[in-house]
Amino acid sequence: MTEELQMIYDELKSSNNRSISHLDAELIKIRAGKATPSMLSSVMVDYYGSPTPIQQVANVSTVDARTITVQPWEKNMLNEIAKGIINSNLGFAPQNNGEVLIISVPPLTEERRRDLVKRAKAESEHAKVGVRNNRKDALDMVKDLKSEGLSEDMSKDAESEIQNITNAFVKKVEDLVELKEKDIMTI
Image (cartoon, rainbow, N blue to C red; front, side):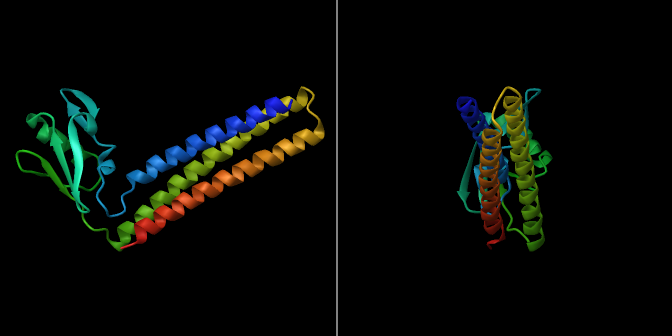
């Protein structure tokens, strides 16, 4: 039975790590005033009729802390890429100089910073819900083992261990968001 319990713990940790990774990916998309190529990671470009991620049609790089450049592999894609950036609702207005798109990342206003913090907290709530759902699944597996003959003491210990794992991951989520909040609110 302890082998099965260890498998449940490992699966819980693995699922929770996926929730943390997803949160990380979502927090990276929330810009904190400094230009990064990952800010455009969600942009899709109409590439000859099919939506394609911007990274597959252009080189995205940063010149400095306030400027992103997008150099398409094919020059005739400049307008399509610009359209994709505008349609992505990131609040960027790319400048086309005939060779590359230049995006100036405006400094964040206090109100915009608060909105970004709210968005980060909403993402953390999604991650916490994921962690709690993983806990529920693990507890259900323990209940199944209990019906197969797992002792009451082992069952209680397992539930306690599952709660400890869950608490540790919820703490990780809170720490990540706290860090992002500091990053966003730092001028």
